[in-house]
Image 1 (cartoon, helix red, strand yellow):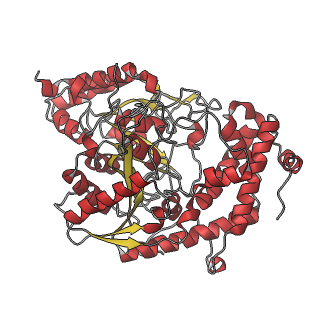
Image 2: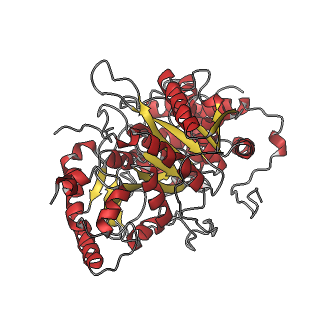
Length: 480
Length: 66
């Protein structure tokens, strides 16, 4: 076996490259699956996985290997080892939703997981997450997720394990869930590509809900091409989720360059210290790359931008409080203290306030759609700063602290989950190294926002950018 | 609008069957709900009442909102 086909090295490559090697028979699904399992066990300290299904994954890989040898190739995911956020049911595997409150073995696959299986993917296991995908918890029943670029820092919430597993090459690709930023946030801080699809593109059947009208499931991957490959496997109408669209899916076909594409930079997301100077500079450099590829870059405006966090969190938390009302009454002690306080507070939101937030959601959507009428794509930083240190408390010691930290003047993702539009986190560089030596630079990320059902245009920009840059090719140094 | 006191918050929680674990819980819940109430009250927009809330967004064949 040549070194280039050594499974221990192959795990570092993008899923699309692995797909070509697997379906051509050049690489064994069993050997590749074993390599990912070995690596996941070696770096268990990152706490990416809640359940690593060694036996089941190797059994699936053996079946894929047999089918591929007999020429029965199901598609590009055949034999590809992937993992899914433990927010989604996978038949025969434990579901915890990252909590101490639920723990059961699923009798059916979530639709998105089932579609991965039907496409021939190997399910390695279930990935760690913030409690019930809420985000904001301080304690983690299945281990604190550590950012592979600096293990003293956060991986992002709530699809933390998915971000870690992809960045640290503990799976070839992952599924995450995004209600109010839970794919884009961890993707940004872990330096990977993550797509929140248009609401209604991917079935949520079999997924623990947070806020039904904003919940989405999407791919978290090393590259944009990987994301498109996974997205095409999981998207489409599902009778078990009546809110999935039956709109046909057009396969993504990369084109060279971005001639004629109009990209709008939302100034409110960067100006007036809404992003750190490093991130703002990173966005400007990314725009220079896009101009070089032929795009026209314009300034755009979203006047309600700074209220995105309040509107998004206010609505999502109220929905979550309703979902959790029974558990909150009967087993409050089993929740993380931050989750419990947040959900109890949201339980008291006046109905009139919920209605007002719903009206402001419509205003946000109106403004986002108007901006997307003037340009093809919008961009903002996906996170306003590099990953912060792991928290030890909520820090919510006054009303003002809540306003500052929780609604977040830097809530860059809220406007777009409120609007139901697709958005992707795309790696665009690294911050300077930490003077204390805990990291050599933290990932920075661009959020690319498209019109509803126009994921392919987002992929087009992202793929062209990755063809012209190499940020997505960097891997964290994990040591022993 | 005056802030809710911790005791008022405890009473409201009790009315819906919820009980804070301890004083720290109650204090933070109080900070949180007072912050949301104040921030929502401060939201203003001239078109606010012209927008009827919809939970689900779809597009017609031409690509605009239905």
